[in-house]
Every structure is written in structure tokens, then in C-alpha cells.
Length: 295
Image 1 (cartoon, rainbow, N blue to C red):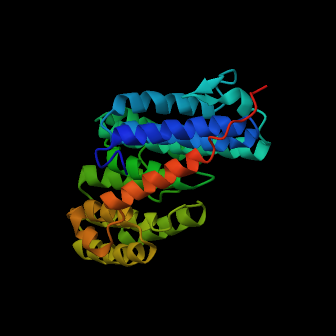
Image 2 (image 1 turned 45 degrees about the horizontal axis):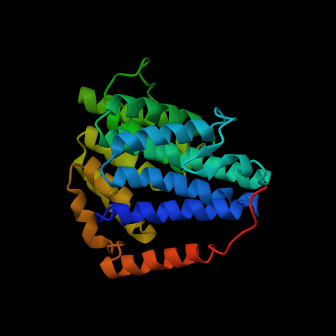
Image 3 (image 1 turned 90 degrees about the vertical axis):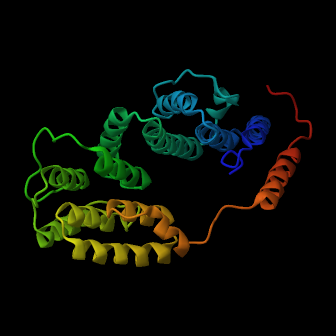
């Protein structure tokens, strides 16, 4: 939030202090690696929010390589001591690397789109969708959003009349939008989506409504579009899911701003930001007591 409100230098300073605090904690408890890696991924987001997308992309790629196990001998990243971190418990190190891998891929998708590199973003989204299809989760939902939004190329093999996977659902929507004709009747599409949802661990249960909005609009079925947008609005307001409601409005060809009146603004004002920054600094200062030298 500091970076988004033009206070990137202050945000960077706080993150640096957080990394230093995590390093001190790791001298006594290797499990503190989880705090260090959280600061690393937050630093990548800081670069993105402060208008430095290319450095953010470079760091996110480094993070993904590391978290995927392709840099086993690396000793540090952004000052986080990875050597000490190797002594963390398997559950902690596994969870930390999973979080890094997940967040780096989602952030990389967003950043590639932000800089206009849609080809690489689409390739990354397709890969992420396939990799996470069985496990579901937020990466799958984010990847499918981007596949549906960016996949302008005809698939190598046209999707069958009844899509069997979430990726095939998105491909069918795009193919229908490109050709301008209805490939699958609404009832059959809805039944296919129901079958896909039953076999896929969707992190966000509202994502399939987004597919229905996109399919109905591509088929020119305005009445169905309005029905699905209304359903999406009710579901998203109940869950506080402003982001997906905005996506649904965009998929329906309407202004995303229509969603804003339904949701409270979650952003803190300047005074609240100052208080949060001071509270963070106090937490870090409590860790400043001298520790025994690292062995």
C-alpha cells in the first residue's frame, strides 16, 4: 500500500529492515526462513507497484527458479541467508518454497500483462494452468483468467463439443468469440462447466460464473449475460470478492467501475498507513537486541 500511494522508498526501507530482522532470527531458529522469503516476494511486488516492472520480472524469475529446486547451491537472495534456512524443519521449508513458487508465478503473470508481453504471459498462463490443474488453488484460477482473456490463437486441436478441462472451457469461449458463432448451446455448456467443476479443485468457486458470462456474451445471448452478471454480483458481494466482480463486468462488456459502489474501499488513508508503518517498525525494533554471533 505504501508503494501504491507513492511512498516506495519508505516501503523499501521497511522491507529491508524486515529481511535484516529475519536474518537475525535465523541465527537462533532456522524456521524464521519463512519471514525472509515473505519479504523477498513482497520486494518483487514493491518493484511492480512502484513502476519498475522489468526488475520485478527478473526477480520473480529468480524466485521461481529457486523455489522450483533449480538453484540448490544458492546461498542468499536479497540478503536472506538460504544456507541457514536449509536447517529449517521440512514442513517450514516446504511451505516457504511452495508459497514462493505460487506467488512468483501469479505475480509474474500480472507483470507480464502490465508490460504488454501478452505472448509470454499466455505461455506462462497455459503452463501454470496445466501444472496446477489437479491441485487447483489460486494459481489455477489466475491462470485460467489469463488464458480466457489472452488466448486469441486457435488451439492446435479445436476443442471438442464438450470441454473436459478448465483450459478447454476457456479455449472454447475464445474460439466462439473469434468465429462469432455459438459452438455449444448454453445448456450443454453449463452442463460441461458443471462436470469440469466437479473434477477440479477450484480455489474460487465463483470463477465458473465468469466463464458463463463470457460464453453467453460470445454467443450474443444478452439475457443470459445479465442473469449471470447478477448471480456473480450477489456471490461476489457476499464473499467480498471485488476483483472477480470487476472481471465479470469487463467480460460482459460493461464498466468495471460499476462494482466499486458495492464494495467498501479497503485502502487505508494516509494516517492509517503511517500508523501501520510505525507498528511494523516497532515489531522489527523489538528484534534489535544483540544476538550471539552466528556460528
